[in-house]
Amino acid sequence: MEQMQVWWIGERHPGEAALDYLRLRLAQAFPAPAAIWTQAGRPEGAFDPRRKQWSSSRILSWLASAGPAGKVLGVTDVDLFVPILTFVFGEAQLGGRTAVVSSARLGHPVVHDERLVLSRLAKESVHEMGHVFGLLHCGVPGCVMGRSADVQDVDRKRVEPCPSCRERLAHGIREAI
Image (cartoon, rainbow, N blue to C red):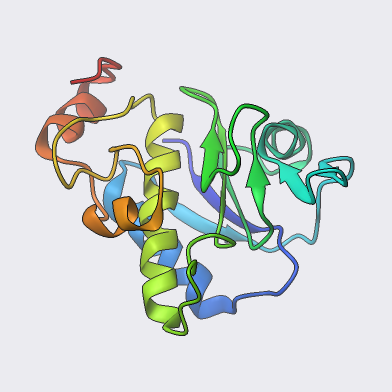
């Protein structure tokens, strides 16, 4: 079974306890062991000075080439984008091996409760790794695989896949509801 690696690639380190929390949430949600990858590294060429944001797509490419073997979740605190959207909480290679999530917008508007931001980050981490495992967006209310346009959408989700998505995970089915 392919191991998942949680890799901090951000600017201000959140601490080992936060990364361990994400590792545990991923291990609970998916049929694979999870570990923390401790090698230092940051993607070069992913920052867009015009937007003052980081390209999540370029980060995914970098994770695939610079990261460890297995499935890799890059975790950061920098603001991410894809060209057609103002920002993204994260991005993943559907059925691939890499995903990236950011806490930059998960405390927006300003939230001083680190536990709430970490809870949101865990939900988005499970969501993006769900795509890596082949899951598409889900329409079941509260499912972690639901779309999130803003933090209120994230707050409405649970941190685990719904029973239908769990069934799809068990059988490798990629259909959306």
